[in-house]
Image 1 (cartoon, rainbow, N blue to C red):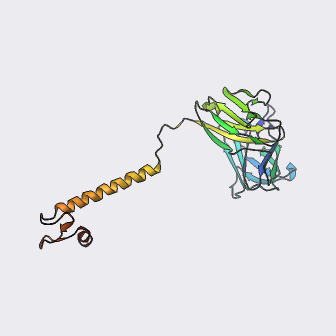
Image 2 (spheres, rainbow, N blue to C red):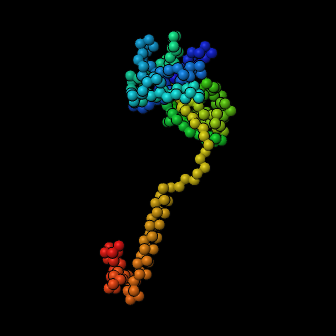
Amino acid sequence: IILHVSLMDTLVFIISKVSGKTGTSVSIPCSYDVKHKNHVKFLCKGYYFNYCSFAVRTDSSQGIEKYSISEDKTQNNLNMTIKRLTADDTHFWCGVEINNGADDRQYFQLSVTTGTPSLSLAHQNVIGYIGDKITINCNYRNSGGVRWCKLGSTCVTKATVSGNIDGTAVIINMTISNVTMSGLKPESSGWYYCDTGDYQRPVHLTVTVKPTGKYVDPKVHIITLGMLSLAVLVALLMWFIQRCSKSCSLFSLCCDGLAPRCVSVIRCFIQYY
């Protein structure tokens, strides 16, 4: 489910059903009105809201590893994550606690299968760079195509195939089921989702400045270190040889200054150094 707030301050459906695979994780955003910035938010599990049980809340420690919730107060968004999905993970509510009043909440459903989900994404968190483009695969099983939407903004539909969202060009390729966004800008960041009509799947895009540093293969560092070590060893060997008398051969060394004698370099090194 992806949610946003209407003029009546209630959470309104955008995404109602998300498909997932057993054992994997799913992250679901939920937006709220700015006036509720400091209110408690929660994820509640159960078909009926009055009888659901809190899975996780923003005002309590998150001791249960299966559920987690994080909040971005600059965007008035929650990110709810459900891990290790099972067939029992079906009915949930995203909510905002209202003091002395009814809580704002919205129901959403998960459809968890052991096989290929009806709609899936390879990643739910992706990074793009300013001015570049990014391609996201929306893997779906139906033949009706998808539309691509941004939370709280507009959609590019399967009928239009191309368009723009907040000034970022969008092209939907129905043949290979992917969406390409080009001319990325910082304001392109946010939550998006693929929508087949029956199922939706959210993904978070972060747009940042492209790194300028040149990548260096770690193998280069290993080779450089090896050559440096060899150079040091040769320098030490030359130093030892220079200490020898002229009567010693290149492969022997004077080791005892009181009683000069020529011995092997290796033996000298082991005994005296």
